[in-house]
Length: 129
Image (tube, rainbow, N blue to C red):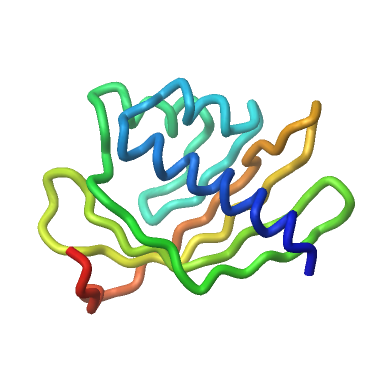
């Protein structure tokens, strides 16, 4: 596995999470491809819907990513797969989900073209909150 690819994709994915924490719709928009497709428990989301969730400010208070895996998908595509524990604003407790994000290299940078979040039932047993 290419350590540089791992570091790059982790930085890209962390950038999306940081945008959710800061309510930074510009950073979120910059990270997503125009043809982005999100698959979530409540349905599909394009780039506009993903960015719009930040119109009222941050949506996540804190997060922690673990069990990171990188899957190269060709010379210009790769997937990052991980477990995310997070606290959403206005919500009690920690939620856990498994995430797969596919990133594409284009014009000298990586953009997120697809993300699928699979929630884990019950509460997450974490001690950092």
